[in-house]
Amino acid sequence: MAAQVVAITEDYTWYGYPIKKIIWNWTTDGANGAIVDATAAGQANKTVNKYSGIITRLVTDPTDTPTDNYDVTILDDDGYDVLMGAGLDRDTANTEQKLESVLGVCVDSQLRLNIGTAGNTKSGKVILYIR
Image 1 (tube, helix red, strand yellow):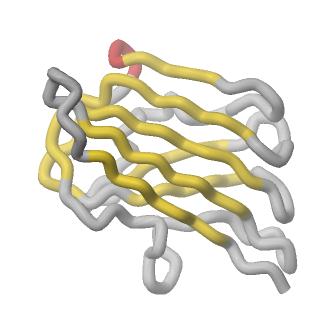
Image 2: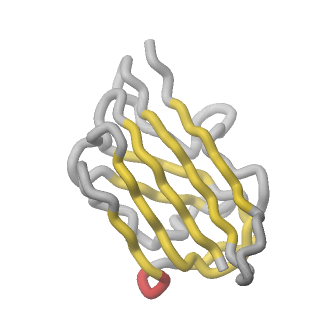
């Protein structure tokens, strides 16, 4: 049985701007088609650090052909999607981006990734930029 897997990279490198970069590499469960779930035991998909700021960019990159129109949400500590729905209906094969004008904010929250309707043993990458 293949378990869902999430690997998180949190980047605190100074790029000349106060921007933080979080990368989630995810794989869905192959045994029962379970999704990456922010409420899962242990919450391995939760950031170590707390973040505050404006979400300036979202990148979704499917690496193992998830089901077309799969969904990405990123929840704050209050359980609300900081993407404001902009991560829904992602493409099965193409890297897609959303910019600040359609994204939300986060305030003093550890962020949790959810992937929905992606299919069994599928994978991808989600990158979030916060200013």
